[in-house]
Length: 402
Image (tube, rainbow, N blue to C red; front, side, top):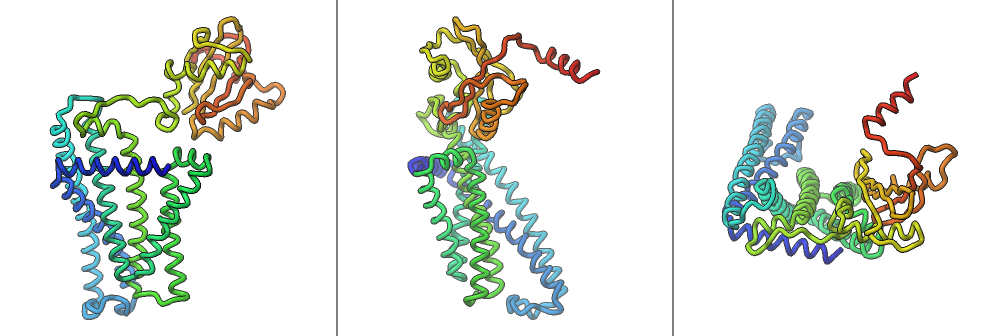
């Protein structure tokens, strides 16, 4: 896993270097605009808290800045309210400028690479890739600036914000090295897992703040509030960075072909770590796993030449069905392959069909196994003929209609 992370980071650095060589002003401008948009969003959510505190106080709270003490409270409420609306509008304007700059930069990148049309919607892919990278880079800059500010005013909180993600990362490395099931979970649920770690990190920072107030001596109340808000933003930006780099790495071949000279769009070889379940259904790949599977079922060696396969529409998401017959065998086999996110369903079905209740109208489950960590069931169908969807619907109505 560590090698995969380092590879993705090295590639992202080379991609960023390419962007800065070709469109340095656009990239710098987008990063700055993104920082401005994030800061405006933060202030537009922070200032209403100030207004609510003022409205609930008889006078000026002591923990407000000394420069506010000489200002009339009602006037200050109006000024802070206007500033809130102003920062909100500024955030909208910055995001609009980001969209315009992204479109112009991606167009220039494509024109510099001088590539013909390689695939459908390549302009959209290029624009999304460039925007994701710029947003991820701006998120890192925001994290660095936030941690620098917090460390200056609230050094103990900055240590917590640094120590927690480092500890979480080391724990993930250890688990991925020694627990194979954890690797499978990360591959299927990386975004959700990173979001969970981020949310836990915020509550760790909040718990530390409470402990500091109860046991030690905290800084001023305003510094505490700002630090807490920034800690939330820091974890949010880290999550956004990880998800953006992960999303970009999934489109690495397309982005390389679009932005780099000498790179061609070549389909990757089938691998359980890089392809989804549908990759295993192509004839050239299927011939590699289907004959050994049926050989285990029949206890005799089989070749791909004596197996005929038909696609069977099931209506079940991420569970492709194959209708298989073997030369010299009158039986019809139903092969069900389950995507990793349907593993729990595969286990439930196997537990039911291996010991079915009497009269259960279901095929006979012959074999339960895994194909490259994908659950697979081999069933034997009872003699009969296949119905079309129209015939099946008509028969269903006959069953339920008196």
